[in-house]
Length: 196
Image 1: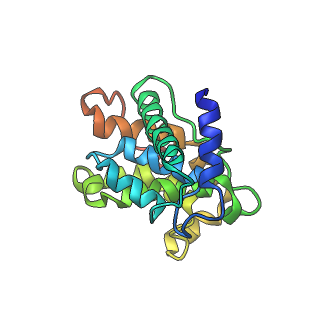
Image 2: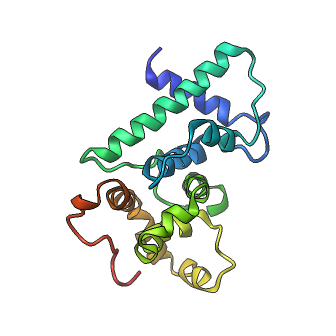
């Protein structure tokens, strides 16, 4: 089976209604695996797999379990390879929140990414809290999780600024990866446009 077919089966599985309410759907899962691939510390597979599903899914049999878990591992490896290369990693969705942000694919991806950060939050901010906070800002804005905070509410009112931030997400992923995984390779300051 091709990897594209495997991903399609994974997407159908993660987007099904019979998983736990707190399980991540496919787009959130992709964001989550992206954060784990960037993370300054390794999260054991057993832990991140459990957190992704919130509880053990009801697999039809051991073969389905092996298929889903192997595809998750392969997707994480693919994300890691792209981040380690000179290519930018694009989320598998449009970089826009559209007319209904709460229903947008990008919102799901951003929420999933932050779930991956929260697993080891202290480690993410231990080295350089200011730079990491600044780099994560577009993803935090995209997630909608902080809209009750005044500074985020203010950003949300400026649609042009929000879109500009969302357009920066692939670059942000590269910068975060270099910051944690290859600090000696940081060729330019990680800070975004000073307006942000």
